[in-house]
Length: 251
Ligand code: FPP
Image (cartoon, rainbow, N blue to C red; front, side, top):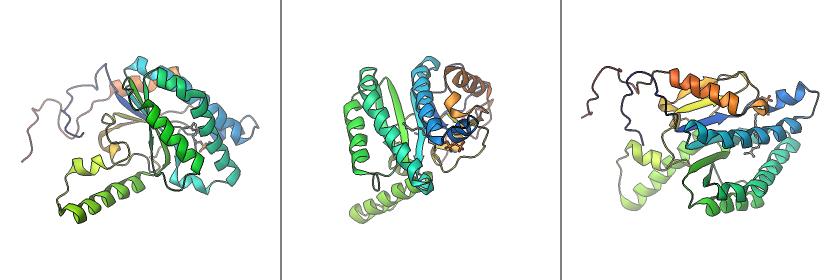
């Protein structure tokens, strides 16, 4: 998962293969219209649909979006239940199409603490699309990057107790993360002008490029994604090396 060659020069015209998006700004989008935040989240779902539709045209094979964080439970109960309702609606209206179009859906994050019907929806979405490999859509839901690392570490502790294996390699930890199996993360986009990770994909972010866009999430779509990809392709990715140097194996 992590052994990547140093890329000489720019990131190249083909990538990014894996893009993660912090879909920020739904509330501000609604407030600017004097509308309830709910409307911003609803329009946010439309933006998500447009973005998933457009992503393969840019060579993107995996899209990971931050739908609901472990910290979002602190929002007023009506907003939380509205977000849950949107997930129900999104899955029931789009699952069949996603399945037909070759999209594999994965839900990242803790399953415990989810309303029972949402937990069922999550399982159904993953099972029905498990055979697909054209495109991978990962929705981080009840997700926190630190919690995900804790869970991966716990799995290693359990393994050590069971099998008496006490050495840990990077790949062991990576294999226990909820997004294991996705291509290495190339690009993280955050909309709305905020510039922080907010506990998203902390491990996976190690060598990802970061792009911050001023657009509010409900206004997102192919055009904004094209701008993020163009910015990514101008970047010079070195993965800790130097572009002109041959890569020497460690050890
Ligand atoms: C941030 O906007 C966005 C969220 C907390 C949730 C993102 C959710 C969706 C786009 C819709 C539901 C998701 C799925 C997967 C169907 P904010 O409310 O923090 O905006 P603000 O910073 O302007 O207040």
